[in-house]
Amino acid sequence: QVRPVESGGGLVQAGGSLRLSCAAPGLTFSMYAMAWFRQAPGKGREFVARISVGGSTTYVDSVKGRFTISRDNAKNTAYLQMNGLSPEDTAVYYCAADRSGTGKFYEHWGQGTQVTVSA
Image (cartoon, rainbow, N blue to C red):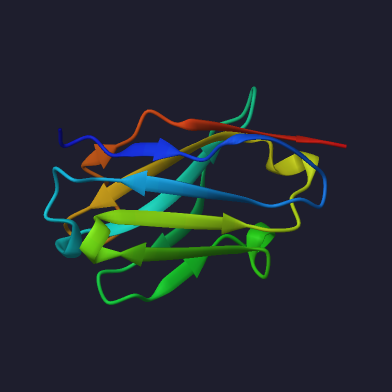
């Protein structure tokens, strides 16, 4: 099983929090940068956050200060802690793995987990 598997999505009220998990036991996890993307209804896929092999993080401006990406190499798992959620965060969230480290191509994608934020 190389494909990452997301979990932790659900329905939450505005202002609430969720923590998404991305398990990738089939990968040499420590060698991959990991990222989260999202796709809202009727919109294209959007980059959300990324964590490098060394732990450096990058975020899209709209989630800075609210979302935190992290990784646990011992558990082959990446996380996305989401606080202060708003209805604009409603989307299917995908995790992806990048072996090259360039951020330009992600070899492995999960199936997605739905996050719905009610007003």
